[in-house]
Picture (cartoon, helix red, strand yellow):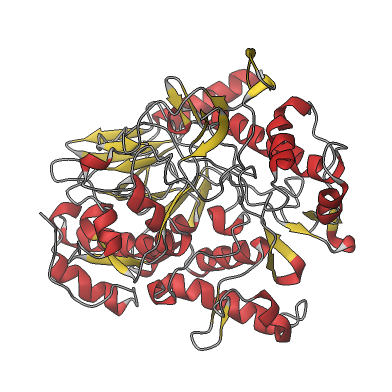
Length: 546
């Protein structure tokens, strides 16, 4: 009887008239929250469709050490978010503001001149995101997009979105604020996955990168075979025979993902990590060999946040990145269904938990290393409904739209300049490792490339909308039109928030004018963005190298 009732309700919801809002935002990420907040501020009815019950994405799931590059990129609601972080820690009795210097990175973590803070606890970030939504009366619906048939098109536009449970939401404008770009395939929008060849956009550090992958590299001398020296025993888990391509050649592989663990050494607020169920020592053989070959530190970061919590990200030759595990023959993270993504995220979690347990407890790990990591456990007051583990896997890159303006390495370097700025970025072009390979008889990482960016640069409006002739009512502030190299700089959370606010303003203006997003004149958009406080940089003349 219960099953019959469920099916009846599902059928009823699937055949009911879609619920209408002017703007429909998909993705409960930091950018999704900002886009929905701005849409409401612009006087539009809006709904935020979140696949998860928690909002804020990476910014409320452990990424508390914000990668800014330059505080000048902050404006509007992104600046307001970091300002509220600053205010919270000034006022919070739970943390002594006078000790902020010990948490400062290059003097920018708690910036008194701009009254912004870029170090924070996840629970504080989520509270502020919820505050934004509550202040603007934004309706939040928890539900996952039907990835097979959830984007319903009509006459070149999205008519409505359909969730897995059959609920449907229509609107005039749609914003894809997911980390995967899940609206792009159904909307008929051109996109890329993986790394372009250098020749595609006249770049120098795109595609396969073995020679340049010097950061987070394994020490020399690690034998690649299960039984050292015996090729017949097979390769170690996660190691490929070769890189499957020459340097600079393109592929569809993804840079590695991980969770940003939130650890503490405060015993009263610490939950130690036990050996994970199904633990297999063989999965950590590469770790043991890396240690024997000379890696003694940098197994994960211990960047301190307030209240002696960490933002523990990947660092070093073997660390928290589960390299090569987000793609395989004929599939990658973007092609998986929601349940398969969740299962793969749990594999990442198990790997990282096992890494910490191994470093703290395994007899093959030298005592000095075990001692150095012995006092760190999960923060008991974070992610309290998820066994103190972050909600969101760090999906560093997935789909990237291909529009009429593709952001490239040249934009990041300043040799190309977009005249229609809707936001600024300033972080280095940062790609994590993509795979492990056998090189000169040793295990080596491939794909980690870091290229400095000298100053903040503009991001084109055309890069957050589909190319002309494709979907006319979609804006994409994170899986935007950029090469793999440029995306490595643009993908940072504060940039995502800034572009999301601009996307919502553009959506509102397109609604008011009853035009496609491709037909919105930048001369009309820019002053409205500036009035909202968006960081755009100075007006420039467009520059594209030959």
